[in-house]
Image (cartoon, rainbow, N blue to C red; front, side):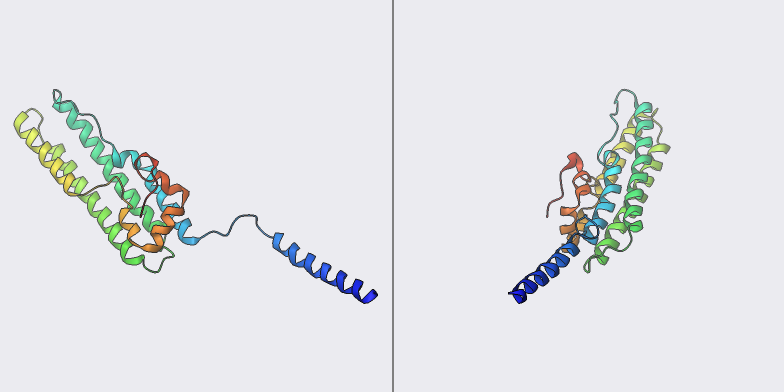
Length: 187
């Protein structure tokens, strides 16, 4: 009888020690490094989403004012695109095996887009709104240049070409705000 009681106490003690070990440490869930990386990148993109997706309202009757609004906006747009590229770089290498080429391509596209926006800004800044026809031609040319850049409303779109990062972007809460309207990225 004492043997059974001793065995029961031993099992209870060992079981209690094992269970108490489960509660030690942090109560935070185990975090996925790729999801944390994606969240960091999405936070930077979300901070600049209004600039990346918006633009000034121009007045066709006041070309000088429209020019100034557009020149200012293009400067802000170039800064926002550069900030997203820098944010990706500053996040460090993502913990995803298939991500390196996607990161390189995305950052390269964003840096090229920033340069193109700055070129368009300079072209527009040099245009004289007093010459109505020439100014409208320049505005059209700048618009075409910016359209050729592709969509900047989802600067992280190419990063989701990595299967691991795509999953991480889908799980990172900050990534729901890194798209216009706070829509979470889809595969």
